[in-house]
Image 1 (cartoon, one colour):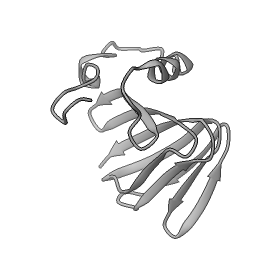
Image 2 (image 1 turned 180 degrees about the vertical axis):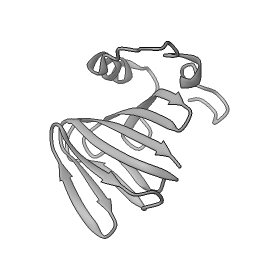
Image 3 (image 1 turned 30 degrees about the vertical axis):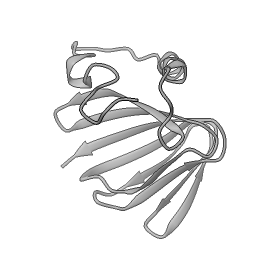
Image 4 (image 1 turned 45 degrees about the horizontal axis):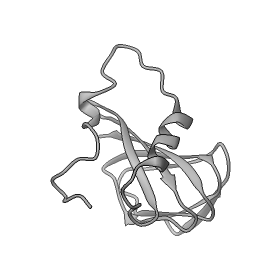
Length: 127
């Protein structure tokens, strides 16, 4: 198990820094699922892009994996790439399947839960 000060991989600001980047999301997902550490709250994640106000984070959820309620200080796009996830936000429940998404305004509390093994791409554009 790692401490909160240890990183599992290089910080996203230190990789994928070229002027154009192609991202193989299924390969990233396979790599996440093959990591030897235990999944936290039933998910693993990797920051893909951390440039200026833009953040892209890929999540690989186990069935029942979740992100507890939280909020982000920017526009949020949650995309279900594969599987089925539920996003609770702004008093509504959004069931997302393959290639579906939900968009949230800044500072909207939200939680995510996977009904089955799933992958999710999170995009945040900070204010």
